[in-house]
Each structure stands twice: as C-alpha cells, then as structure tokens.
Image (cartoon, rainbow, N blue to C red; front, side, top):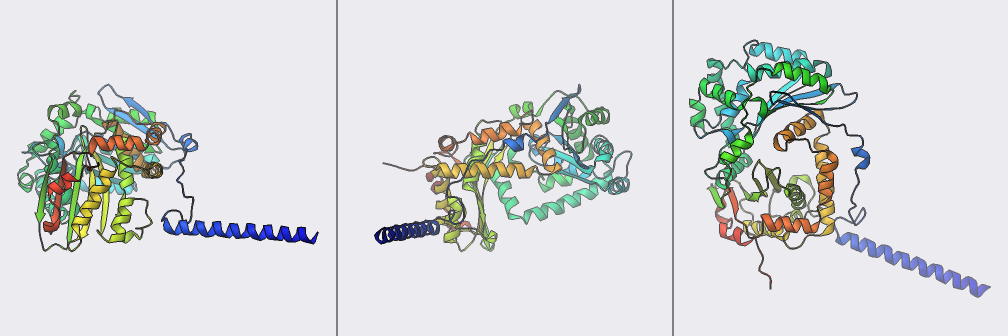
Length: 493
C-alpha cells in the first residue's frame, strides 16, 4: 500500500511539473507575440445575427417629381436627424465656377425670402436644434438635428433655405471674405493640402482634380448669377434625397417632403449622366512641395481605387483595415495587429500614418498617408509602406483577415450609433447605390472576404500599377517616383 501511495505521489508531482512547464511555455509564447498575452491567440469570427434582428428597416418612397424620401425609425427615440443630400459637388463644376457648391453652402444660412439671418438663427435656437451643412467633391448636404416634435419645422426650414435663399449681394460680398479666410486656414492644415494636391496630380485635367473650395480668383469673381445658375442646374428633384433617422415617422416625412419640395425642378439629368459625359481619369504622377523650413514631412501614396459600386470595394475596405493606422500619441505600437504599424512604431520611422480608401462614382483612391520628422529615415519609411501594400499580392494570413473583418464591421456599426450617422448613411447610400444596403447584406459581404480574395484584389489594384504621390516638407530624402513604382511588385525566383 505504501508503494502505491508513493507511486500516486510521483504521478501527481510529474503532472504538476508538466503543467508548470506548459504554463511557462505559454508565457514564453505570449511574451514573443504582442497579441496573445492576455487573450485568445486566434481571432474569432463574430456572428451579428442577434443584432441584425433588432435593426429597423429602411423605408424608401420615390415621389412623382423624382425626389426620394427615406427613413429609419428608432423606437422610443425623442430626437431625429433630417437632412437633404444632393448629388452636387465640386466635381460638377467647371474651371470657371469651381468653388460655387461650397459658396452656396455658406449662403444657405444667410437668410431666405421669408426669413432674415436673425430669424433663422433664433428659430433654430428656440427649438434647441442644430443646423449644419457640408460640401464634398460629389455631394452637398444640409441637415438639422431636432426633437421629434419639431421634425415638420425642420423639413420646412431645410426646404426654405434650399429653394428660397435670398442670395443678397451684400451677404455675398461678406461671404467672399469669410471663404478667403477659410482658405487661408485650410492652407495651414498640411493634411488638407496634401490630399488636394494628391487629387490634382492623380486626376489631372479631369473633374475630381479640382478642389472643393476652388481657387481664390474664382471666389473673388463669382456673381449672384453664377450661384443661381448652379442651383437651377444641379438642385433638382431626381438628384436629391430627403433622409431621416431617429424619432421620425416615414409616412409623415413623405407628406412633409412632398409639400415642402414641390417646387423643385424635375430635370431628368442625373449625376450618372454627367459622370459618363466627363469621367475621371487616373494619371500615375507625383507632385512635391519642397520646404526645408517645415519641421515635418507629409506624403500620400495612392493607387487607382474602386468606385462605390465596384464589386471589389468591400475587399478594399478590408485591405485598408489590415494595413491600418497608427499615431505615436495613441500609446499602442508594437502591440498593434497591423504589421506596418509594428515596423513603424518599433523603428521610430514616423509620427503617424493611415491607410485610406476613398470612393467616387466611377473611380477611387487607395493608399497610405504618412507624417514624419524631417530628420527621419524616409527611405526606410517608404520601403515599409511599399512592402506592406505589395505584400497583399503575395502573402495574407487568415488571422489578420478575420481580425480586419471584425474591426471593419465594428467601425461601420459604431459610425451609425446615432441618428446623424444613420441619416448620413441613408442619404449617401441612395445617391451612390440607388438603395440602402441592408446591414445583413453588408456584413455578409464583409464576411465573404478571405485571404485569396484580398490577394486577388491587391493583384488588380496594386501589383505593377502606376501610382500618384503628393509630398510636402523637406522632401529631398524621400525616394523618387521610380522607387515607389518599383516597389509595386517583387522579383521572385
């Protein structure tokens, strides 16, 4: 019996030693891997079925005029966002009137035929509401965030500023100075400058190459007639969407929009017709603004990307997420999932970088934007960026794709947590896709992306393709265009 007890004690000691060895091995593995220290070593694909069952339907109604009204009602919501999204931006301007769409955005809040500026501001403030607008290269938006009971008033105000803007000559002269000051402020934001130059060089002699604000000469010379002509040409019912989210009833919104926007022109010309007439053309090229006095070097490297409706637009979003983004002020670095972020952070190659994927009606831009000290090793930074993007053509891991899919889905859902994000998605989707893509379909398309899909898409957009580069700062040590172009493929024997 005593021998049996000794044998049992020996087995327990051996088992304990084995467990200790396994635990120490796990610790060693965890210390070597930046992701595995505190959680599962394998990213898990998530099912959002329970969430999808709770998302309200998006209701869409097309009025006889061509105006579309769309809404997503949130039960028990006491606030709502109501907006008008217009298929009109700097892309649909000419060299002579470039800047008109943005100028009109400023004039929209300077009074109408029935409301002075003061009356408009007091009316919004009395409701506790918020009125705003923005202009992009392909879209203009005017929206209001109000209490549920003030939805009718919000629709009426939006229709008034869009159809009955006074366009007073004195107000126009005042706004010239405001916009010119805004342009000076934008010129002080390096990221804005770099991306404007990136578009100018990537889309030379085509509409997307124009800036949103326009040249200063145009701002000084645009007349009231130019603004009125732009409204009459582009603010038409078929090119507009009235979208609402939150505490809004669809039938009520349809009735309100039908009455408030009854006077809109019904010209059948659509943005798609204009794009087909004057398409964007991508040109492999570069522009460098060398200024040795600037403390930072900022540059963007971009390939021709996908349009909104391109089947590969979703895989490109996943690819963008894999490349990721990093900022030295964020704290994370070697522990991030992105391999590019790890290299940049560990070696101190840059202050920040981000992958971007910009979509338009018929084309896009896909690439990386980076910011570094002028004393940084820009050659190594350029090599790391080129290598990581080109790696997607050859070697993509299953785990990084699963992780990127989860991150992308979370980003999309987070962006629509509030009524404003939801209304924005509704308005933009109807203008770009002609419908609101259901969340179930969108998430399913993301989940369908696998490593082979990523490699195929990278092969289409990155492998041995021309690229556009825009750089600003002390660019003398930034490798030339040929270096970047050579980095779009690997010579493998």
